[in-house]
Image (cartoon, rainbow, N blue to C red; front, side, top):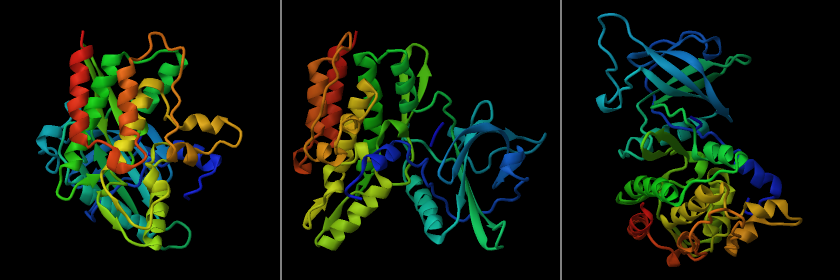
Length: 362
């Protein structure tokens, strides 16, 4: 499991591709004990439950993700704070450790916990348990924090991991598999968009979609990382508000999947959940071709990712055998409308993808 400037340079855009494992949230909830150091392979207590670190799965920024296994003492009750429907059969989970150095980072962590606790859907990654503990700085003795977040484990990796591996082998998903994966991402996003007011994920991309292979079934796809999720609807009524939104988006929304209105926001605009629809269109393209529809400009002299996005300059790869049907290309273009008002909503997209699944099912 790996937990992703309005004038972006090529360097910034490439960095976005490797961007944050995410700052994830927590409310202050005690860790009963912390048995030395994650680096030493000790045990970690998250509230009532004790976990042994098996190995590291990934890292990024100030976050580290570990495969952990629950340690259960004979005769003791188990997992008091974990929803029974999410208890692992073999006791393994993914645990994310976040090093928090500032009050701002601490608030971002708490924010994600608050947002994550709202959602309950089979295609959204559930946060099973969490704790934040204060720790003293190693050098100056100042008070820092560490957050521990517990999730189900998905060892097959993200859609990005799998797409990169398939590209190396010159493989691609079948049309029906593309549609099944995409439909599941849409299902999770619909849950978020159905709140009143709606929530936007704000960073839908292959690196935030976990994939689990299933024998005889399409892969299971689960949308994760709600560090950027916020109420979707925002009224922009001044240039300063527009610039503030652009600055926030440059930090929280990966550049190759970021909607045009988040690159260059008008001084009078109504932003809504259709920022996610743009990202969905980019993600559908990426399920097919392994990359965002705009990253080709990074290989061009003087190419501008922002201009390609603003003008919706999509290029379709050639040479794929068999090629994807034109109906999938048209589906992508439908979502990649530069004007948000012209984009479909999530219900429209689900109706359409269900029709395509019926059409292309064997």
